[in-house]
Image (cartoon, rainbow, N blue to C red; front, top):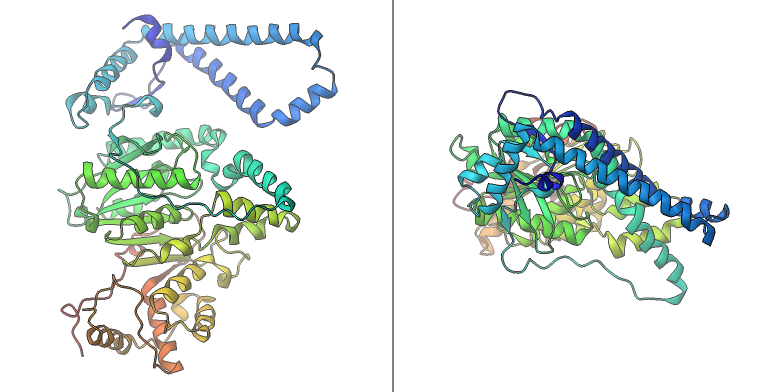
Length: 519
């Protein structure tokens, strides 16, 4: 390979051959990379602080004709430093036999279109900058229809708030909502990400893949296929991470411990995934992941469980609304509407700007999505959650409560009357274990009898169910307790505690008439 090609080949992080912990670059490559990293950090810092820097430079009189010469000298010096660093790096790589072997493997894999062929298999022995990983799957045809953000009618009086909201979201706002997209944070956690990927590849036989979305983003994914290793392996769990989490160190561990097949992916802008985690890009990303799982990996939708943690619940529920035939949805520590979490944490003086910013650009409204999916759902609530509660140490303000109530109101409208909604909020202000005297057999018999009499054959895929129109208050209250116990599981922990195996369960589904025995 010519020397100049080594300048722009990717940074090699690791070779999975068991002989070394990490790839050790030579002196020239090492110092060339360090200089480029330092310059990149300086550029990032200057970019984010540019309004302040420009203001300081302007006040000190640097924006005059006499300053052109000094600015040109500084720019030329930085350019020469970058060129020197690139040459040092390229020369060092060309002299390293391990890197030369990697570069040849990468070139062979780029020429191959077979994801499972020998060239790609050889490439998977290496961990390197994912930006230059060859695409393994491209979405075929158009993407599913994305959920559009809601735009209010334009009023001239609201123009200042509209401008402020737009600027806020497209600068620091999206990074506050998704801090995992901040490069500085990613640089800090990179050693942990490498370690996590190494464990997934070497211990779990995971395969990393690049999936290209309908809008051109490239999503970093990894799949652990256990179909030939366990009964649970026939079911694929697709994991959607939180706003500062990555598949390398995220929620994949729980279903993996249970021997499921598992597919993890990183949000746009997270680690190896390109783009930004705006809702439309995130929707296209999870849609591409589902298409990859179904069309390329060969999993049927009815054998797929969608598992979302925290803000990943939005990605999960969007996917469920687009693929309603999936086996079930597990939502861990998620919320009903991100606006209800944003408002209490922002100054009241800018509440109008916050409302416009969220509703028009980052409308993560799970309440609107959960009623579009009629399959089995399990909500896991963390009783000491400090993130999802709008008031500290107040379980009654956990936004998962309101998501559950919204779902029950849609699915069982005659059960969740206003009086029962208040009763449900009262029950949910305490741990589920405090809900006593649940007449489960009685409530199940009422439900099955209604479905049998109304020709639904006991299927839960045809909501809303109009059961309860003639029920007494006592009967409705009993059904409320029964439904809460079926759809909700409490885990005594904070927001970021790893989920124990016993809490990850296949969501409850109303059995068919043939599966249920009346007693």
